[in-house]
Length: 308
Length: 301
Image (cartoon, rainbow over all chains, first blue to last red; front, side):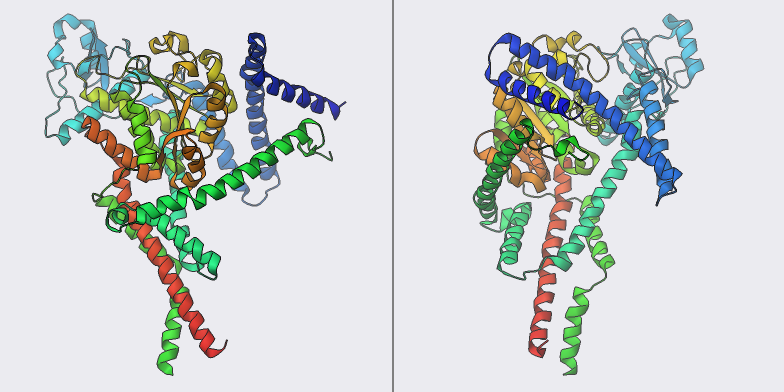
């Protein structure tokens, strides 16, 4: 049973998947949608849990056994738990209850306008008697229609971004951009907030690390091209010349000043490349169909794992 | 004889040059144009970039919508991010309703960043609420839902079944623009921006089953894989790597007098000099190789 049940399930669902494409009945589509949108989602969610469990278990074992580079497993686990905690309770951009945005320019939404203050005390004064201080001329900007008052931490942070962008654009165009406090009448200097929400972690850690890793490839590629890309025989020569032409076709200067390079690059992509790609695709497609049938009818059982 | 030995040693020495020398050369040809970018004559490809631009231009004026599947990661950001930004600028200039989603979790941050950037650009220029780009009215970010096949097929039947809430946790059916958009039938095109074969998955499942137009924004290294789909008309235009992104930036700027930063055009300077450096290095490496082989043949080695 342990062996046959997955095979029966696979057979039933695979045949059903095929039928639902060709049968136009509404009821068939409804069942198909239910299977895909609900059942597949649940399976997908379990796959994530399984993946997380496997990751944690793998690194715990590595630390316990003091395997090679076991210290890095601590980095993985600590990063995983900290970012999960921040993401679950702080939200992607600080919209949930855990505070992940600190400090920054003090903003208040009042009567469809956004005002800036030096500090919280100044804002308190304004709030206590707004009629005394309200002055639309000293508003930083009108409150966007999709933002509600009072400003949430997340909304205030987004508005700070917008103000910063306005200020930098104004500076670029030689225009003086100044925020005046409606309470004191003095200019309010722009102050960035400190953020540790998921988006900030992504922008501040993952993006630079990922970009650095990939940028290093360019150096290795150049070194490898210099040392190993040799015209040892006719085939290597054809490859080398094609690569040169396609690469030259990517350079605007070459396409502008070397006649025929662009057309030649396009010909390589349109004719020899396309012919070989189509051949490969047809072969892979037929192979995939054959393998699928073997799996559906239980001939190919390697996917079951173990000794099957 | 001694002179000859010296020349031969030079070829050998050049072939075995310290890799750090190559790294320094590459760093210089990359960094200098990034600091001092120069203008390049951008030639727009008719079959790829221009075809996509024209297709977006032909969207109906009312009830138009595009789904952008933004599946970029920090590794391919220099190529794919400018494409996404240009496509968003073009869509918002034309007031096309944009739905965006990601099929992988690590794409969410960059996709959101692109939206924030373009929305800020538009809102910074806007003088009225009509000119502003407003979340829910002009665009919706659906977020991420695994596995990829679920949203790809599910959006063809009913968006709300797959994404009852948007990325920010709002009820999707409460977003004003979603009153007219229920499935692929209410959209004009899917733009898949990815560094892998996802555009082909959209062709195989979304287009084959629901008949929606699909376009792609892909990295230069994977362009060759998509040409058969472009030739068969299954892909409506395509943006090819950073070069394609620069072409799209140029088209958007010319059409709408957009003065915003053109990231791909700036990057093209560094990419061009690096390509030239690689070509020269390969030529030099081969010259050294042939000279060395010639020397060995003469000596009968």
